[in-house]
Length: 303
Length: 288
Image 1: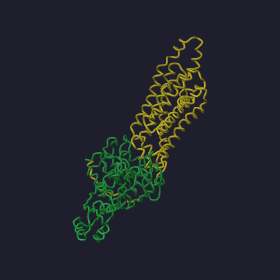
Image 2: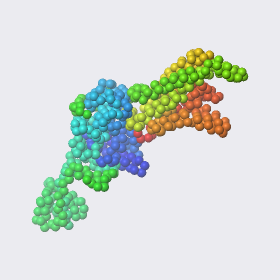
Image 3: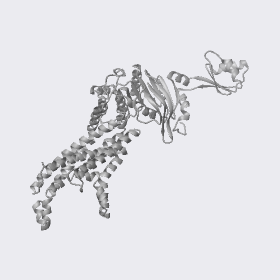
Image 4: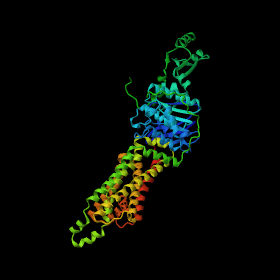
C-alpha cells in the first residue's frame, strides 16, 4: 500500500505536484494517468525518495522508502528506462544492484530470463534500444522480488508484444497481492491494464476511482437538455435507471433515456425544451475533457 | 526484442528472505561498478604507464655525474655531490603530476558518470540513504588509486635508481626515505582521487568536475608561483605550500618548502576531507 499525504513539490515558482492525497491499494493494478508534465514522474520520484517533497509525505506500507532495511525487497521501481550507466553491461548493472542486498547471482539470471534479456545481457547498455532499456529497468525493479512495484511509463518504447507482456505481467503480480502502481499518458493503455485509476493534471488529482466507474463515466450516453422547467422535467423522466444531473440552472444531463424518449415525455407533459442534444464520449474524449484545462503543453492547432 | 517471454514466469512470493542492505554489501556493489567500466581500466593503465615511462625518460636524460661535475665551476661541485641522491627523487617523481591529473579524471568520472547517465537514480533506489553509496565509492576508489600509485611509484624508483646508479649518482631503492616516498606517492594519488570524487559530486558534471579538479591540481600552483614570483610576496609563496599538489609532491619525497612530512599529510587530507564532506552533504540534500 502506498499512501500519499498532501504531497507537494515546487520547483521555484512552479508547482509540479499540488497537495495530492491518494492511497494505492495492494492486490490491484493502479494506473497513474495524466498528460506529460502533469507531475506523475515527480510524484513517483518522491515516493522513492529521489526528490524531496516540499510538503507532505509519501509512505509505503507505513514507512518512508529510506527507512526500509531492505529497500529492494520492499519496493521495485522503474522510474527512468535510461537510469543506467551506458558503459556497463546489463548483467554488470544488475549484479551491482543485487550486490547491495546480497541478492544471489541466480536471481540476477532469473530476472534476465524473466524479461527476455538473455541475448543482450553481456552487451553494454549504451547500445540498447528504448524497449531493451525498459526491460532492463523492469528486471532491476524485480531483483528483490518486491511487494510493491512502481513503474513510470513502462510500455514506452516497447513493441506490441512487449506492451502485452508488461500488461499481463502487471496483472499477474497484482493477483499475487502486490501493490502495482504504473503511470501512462495513454487512457486506452490504462483501461486495459488497471483496476483503479488516479488521474493527474497539472499536479492535482482529477479523478481517483475504479477503472469500471471511470469507463462507465467515460462511455456514458447522456442527453443534454436545456429547459426553463428543469424541476418538472426531472420529475417527469424520473425512473429506476435514469440519472438526472443539473449542470447549470436550466441545463440538465440525463442518462438512461434516449433523446427521443425525453422529447416525447416533455411533449406529453407540456414541458418546453430549448435544447436536446445526445452526447456520447469515447474513452479518450473523456480523458481529454478531464484534463483539458490541465495540460501544460498544448498545441495551438488541433489535428 | 523478439524474445518471447511468458508472463507466468515464476516470480516467487512477496517478501522472500533475500538479503538486507549493509555497508559491506554496498562496498561490494561499488567495487563491481568500478571494475565493470572500461574507463577505470584505461585511466589506471595510463596513469601507471605515464609515471613509469616519464621516470625512465628523465633518468635516461640526466647526464653522467662525472660529465656534470666536469662542466660546473669548482665551487659548485660540492653542491652536486650533496644533491646526488636528489636526482633519483627527481626522476622517480617526474611523472607524479601527470598521474595525479589522470587519477583526478578517474575520480570525477566515477561520480559524474552516474549523474550524466542517470545511474545515480538506480544507485539511490537501491541505497536510499545515499551516504553509504558515496562512502563506499570513496573507499573503493581510494584503495584502487592508492594501489595504482604504490605500484607506479615503486616501479618508477625501481627503473630510475639502477639507471642513475649506473651514471654515478647515489640512490638506494630500499632506503627508508625511498620507501616512505613510495608510500607517500600512493597515499597522495589515493587522496587526489577522493578529492576529485568530492569535486565531481559537488559539480555533478564531467566537464565541470574535471575543470574544477584540474584547476586546483594544475592551475592553482602555477598561479601561486607566478604571483609570488612577480610580486615577491612571501605569504603567497608560503600559502602555496598548502596547495594539495605541492603538499603531495612533499609526500612523494620531493620536499615542499619547510613543511614537515606530517604537515604535508595533513594538508592533503584536509583537501580530500573538505571535498568529501561537501560532496556528501550536497548529494544527500539535492534531488537526484
